[in-house]
Image 1 (cartoon, rainbow, N blue to C red):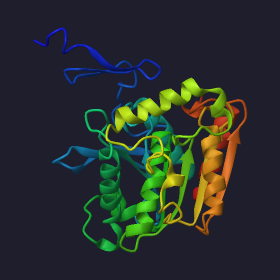
Image 2 (cartoon, helix red, strand yellow):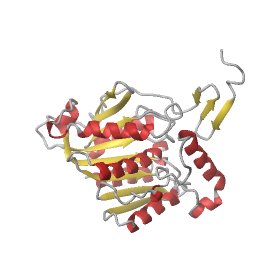
Image 3 (spheres, rainbow, N blue to C red):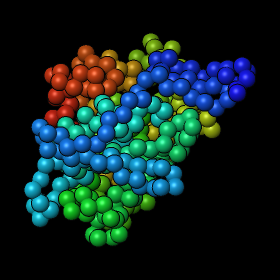
Length: 318
């Protein structure tokens, strides 16, 4: 039985509902629900879970839109990274399952939603390593190069690969695109990335962050919680503009989505402006949702701004 000392709280983030104790245990007070894969009776979208690496437990949820047979025109592939500050939510959380199920139907794309391991039990950079393994696993199905997942072999056009994510997942999408630019994907083409309310930071406040220093402190402290060995808020994984490889993005277009009332809004605009000046050479677009907060589209997916975001995301891929 753990002693009273061992049960002392070492980290507490009530805003997102997670606390860690001296004995190493972690309590998550929200974002713990899961939903099984299914076939949507309305849209016909099918989903299933696959294990990518049995040794680590890395898995993904796959979505296949309604289709008749594999000889029809092949579909784009979206590799999606969920948010939650690297420590909350999963690929099988209801809000991610419901959103991606709807997105697969609306966009007519195949989706691999990566269930990377979470901090603090699995501190960063494990989430980045898992994400890269998942991407390489998906890419291994191109040109009959060894992958054994039927949905990817039969239905995916690997010349139309996209990455996307929200919040921490958008951070992952950017960093994975840089890794594609540095290492390649064996001939598979990454067309573009969609960064929804990306969780980026930096030592020096920018824009409205000067008026919300307590929120900035929360964000900076959460980063150190999920990545204890980080160099700090200017770590290139957290502040991509500090990355010497920032301009080596392995795609030719980026869509950044921000929300007017989101603390992270100015970081999204800063990313867009710096990418345009970096010499990268691609096209970066930005969409701002007026009057909205962080990841509002999960909270109210049928509101006008959420529908507009979904349609812009779909148009970007098609």
